Image (cartoon, rainbow, N blue to C red; front, side, top):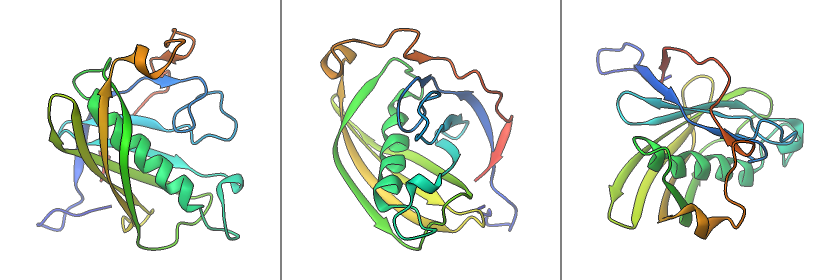
Length: 175
């Protein structure tokens, strides 16, 4: 949990939950090995997701694999484009991750991401993976190419594959 300059927790209003899918690793509701993330848009323009890793996500015993950390940072930063435009999609063209401290398996983790630049075809963003005590365990920078959905997937996204998140979400969160 971060604190404001006055030493108070940074509490942000949740605007809405983004859609989720059936089998996506980051948000897939039926993906048994996935993270089941609930992606929440915050009033200040950031994107927030809280999740818990599984034993299957570890590298060394009790530590989350760096590829899993990279995947959730990529997923969260990449979804920034959907704030204000839920039908916008993109593909990753660059991802850089800095690992700052070990990430334990099985605890509640948070990623917060924000947009840093946008042109007509490309956007950039940054994100941080936070441990339960609010400290930054990893940070990432990424660039994405905005694409129409038909260029990303040949099958498209039916209501079975891409749908409103049925889970309740909080009115505000501490970041």
